[in-house]
Length: 435
Image 1 (tube, one colour):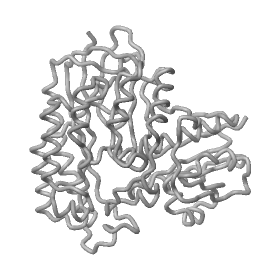
Image 2 (cartoon, rainbow, N blue to C red):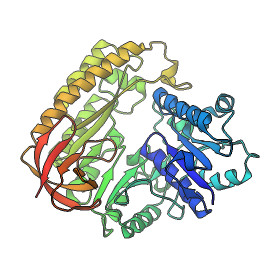
Image 3 (cartoon, rainbow, N blue to C red):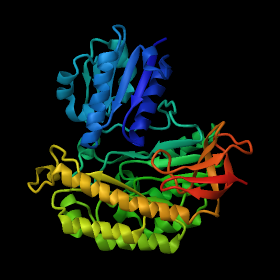
């Protein structure tokens, strides 16, 4: 039996691809191991979203190229292969094979044929379905479900459409069937993901079908939380917000990457909305669901962002008081319209602006969390140990948001929901006592 070690880098969408590869390998008789030293085959599933992701991916490949034993094989997969296939072959001659984003289903064949096959990359377009084998790498109670692949937005700074291709959605029936199967084996929280979840279904149904999908998913017994991630701002409709307000199973959690607020910068970014639309969406959500958690991300240092535009963004963040906020320094990606612009900001300016915005948000987050002290909320237990429970509320997405820490008390196991009284707060985490 071949032993396989998987290193999955990047986002949750990439993690699902890793789970699919592990599922296919398990179906072909392979065993997954957690320690790379025990593996016959090492797989590095790479990310190339921004320069830091590329550096991490290349550093990981380099590390395992150096450490691998004579009998071990090293396979590199994912976005970086799709983006830089020829360059990677030259950079990492000790790697035995390179597989693109649409060839995951061939992973077992590639391993069998080694060392014959070195590069397996074709036009992107693969999306798994309910019949695709998958081994979950997340806790069973909280699972990611990818509803579509690729993206049609083509923002000027982003290389994802070139790597992942155009939008390709799964059918309503296929997604619902997978979620039903996950519920049967113990899933309680379903996190719907894609490059643009609000555009789900437009390629196969002629218009976005996220609301239709959600109306089917809320009927599934056993699922308690449905979380929406990666919502394109101008596609967050009143119909969607009203559905979230009406359905208890859909977390009142809106992950809406605004990227900027200055109209000029948004135009340079190729975003299909302006400040007025962003403010309209925030007002709509807060009027319909006052308790909603709003998460967003911003890019600082994009070409054309001058000091005035950054100050406008800072003032907006100060006024909007987002529950969750992430900041990226603009990454100049080869082949993108933004990358070709001449008015590039230097790295020092980017990092200074990132630090300022994150410091501002840290103060806001601490104030918002302190206001929750004394409240009683329902949380999902993610892990349990001698020191207590690590939990999340409906306002906290896995991996990216804060936690609710509960000291050891009444018995609770991962995957159960408990009531907690919040007793303490830091900038990102809460602490509480089980009721």
